[in-house]
Length: 292
Image 1: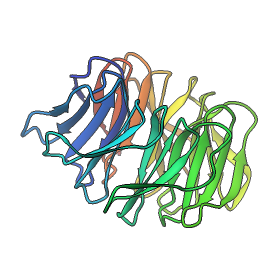
Image 2 (image 1 turned 90 degrees about the vertical axis):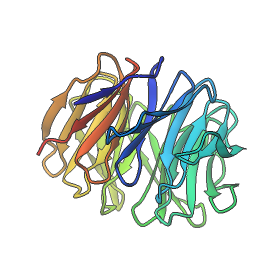
Image 3 (image 1 turned 90 degrees about the horizontal axis):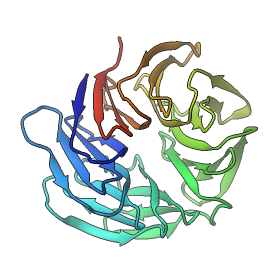
Image 4 (image 1 turned 60 degrees about the horizontal axis):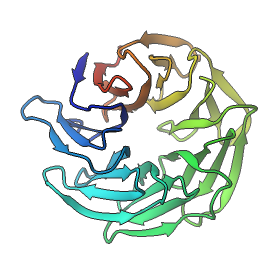
């Protein structure tokens, strides 16, 4: 396990570059950092972009690093550049999530203005995907085929499945209590994992949404989720200070890791599925090997 120190406040978001050699992190210190996982160069730091860097993501080709900011702006950086290539107002009140589309030419964002938007990357332009929701979205996930955007809401356990092409809300997944803080599709698109404020992980089959499976073990909100590339394991991160690895088929908990001293606020899985990055309230980024 490796730890990367530099943030001076809690780490809110992490994302791997598509080639797996770099890791981006954003924090409540307002800085965006790019770590070289090969150890050949010092981290690149873009200091004090806003009060908080709320979300980070790479475009699928790795040419741009996107940062969603507390002041509502979406900023795009060349990984080797010093200044933003472009910066646009995205969601007044803060950008909550950024998710690339598999087609590589656009991304989706969500914010506290209750909207989900789609952006063209060729010429940055914000288009509303669907009418505003009743409450702010807290999590987004795009199906592997790019046809569906899953939107989790902040205050009640509702997940909407939205047609990515026309913006129609096709399905609503609901549970009893809590709210959704994290979402992830399985690589084959047949499962949607949702982490909630009660520490539960729900495994929904979008085609048969009546009976989600529940993975129980976390005791505080689940802030991060990721399936391994083969879809057989699920990695989760929680405010209970732990990251956990689950067998998807059986629902069995395989490993529990306590790499952080405080809440674990974010998680990312490397493209090859071999390493995991987590960021925490302890201001640290941890990178660790997935168990075999």
